[in-house]
Image 1 (cartoon, rainbow, N blue to C red):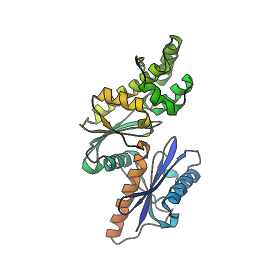
Image 2 (cartoon, rainbow, N blue to C red; image 1 turned 135 degrees about the vertical axis):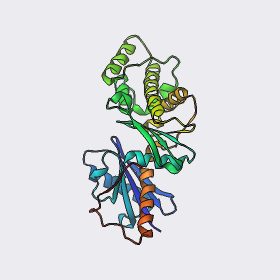
Image 3 (cartoon, helix red, strand yellow; image 1 turned 45 degrees about the vertical axis):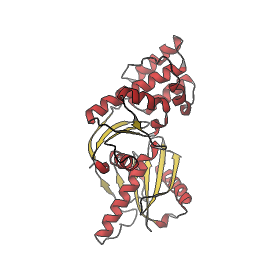
Image 4 (cartoon, rainbow, N blue to C red; image 1 turned 30 degrees about the horizontal axis):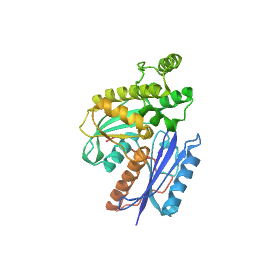
Length: 281
């Protein structure tokens, strides 16, 4: 049996999925991102391989994605984040046609065909107020752990309003709310509501469909999921490990690419010379 790897090098973490020819996940890992992308990607890959009981030589194809995808010399192909997230979400929830991906530095709304092929997409502007990094800054100011903000937000009884589209001004609003005696729970829910409103605008521009799937690290926060569902006025799909969607999609596309190469009677190019890139399709 052949095995492939999908490596997603994000702003906060590196995620790896090891998949076999039957499209079953055999191993996975998550490692905190460091500036030296190659060693940290290798570290994450080794951890996933260890879980799968495999060696790197057992891999027939490696696909990378994420903002650091070009910095992995042992890859076979690099693929855009939007393409990978779409494929990963469709694999997890086959009936979905709308995907929202909120990570540390960006938010993306993607409209997809059956199977995960991209139809349309929109991304947020460069301001940090529209992505997960804003939640981290708010949590730091409020002196709470990021992993706790979801549970705090969901306990809110009177969410505060955070309307500024600029991260700096939004942080000033948070300071004002604290000075006025607002609770941490209500402020964090205000942060989540602000992100949900921005997400709705992106989704409408990409094309809102009946079934929406929420992926990315921010999807782990229960309060954010609740805020999004109330804003969209519908339930959203959330996997148990929503941050793995990009790596999952990369692995699926690696397997598809490998199958195509085999069908054409070719062999995968020797690493690390291959520098092919798959564009958004």
